[in-house]
Length: 233
Ligand code: PEP
Image 1 (cartoon, rainbow, N blue to C red):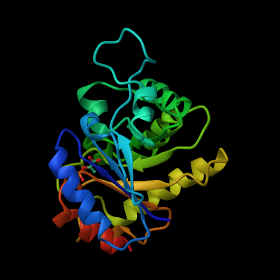
Image 2: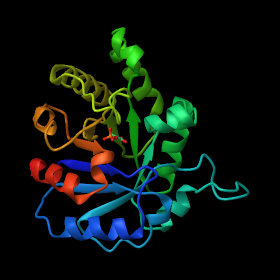
Image 3: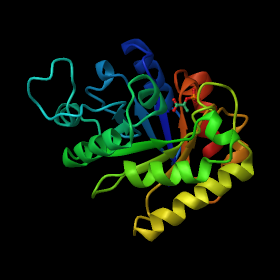
Image 4: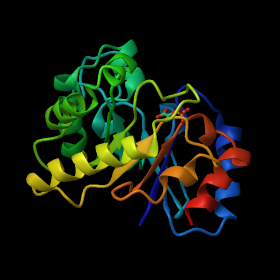
């Protein structure tokens, strides 16, 4: 089953959530839809069609860590997923692979499925370092045990309107699949993300080992999100 993850980042309120949920409920689809919402909107999802994810998880378990939201707290809201190592966390909060791996482990320990984001910078892309960078990020960011999802998102493609060539995406997804297979994790879904919209998705949706997409800006409103769902049907 193809997967579509929407990442709302620091956007949206209760009314936006209600509107998008209602629109998705009215849409016929067989794909798995996961909405990664701000903490304030995680609670009390009644939809069978939409699974909920958080966008970050604390490095700590419950305790004296003011302002942190632990894995147990996320699980308690009914959320089933959590983004780990999104490029904006890696850039603005200096989350390295070791931190990402620790968070992925904490997610698994709290019965959440981590969606582990990996992607090269523009400089790495331009100097042909994408393959070694992605290999290292992948092997050093995944949890010690349990299921997870990989989202390959070139950092330079996120929010920029730029996307890699079809052939580049195909090569990297094949490499990620081969690495996962070598560690008996070939059933792990591999998503692609970075400025995906209803138009450009057609270039990527039939690439082998692209098991779905992660979408930021276009997931905020039904006008842009529903056409993506429809094109994945
Ligand atoms: C993202 O936030 O992971 C993302 C892919 O964003 P956008 O679609 O806006 O580039």
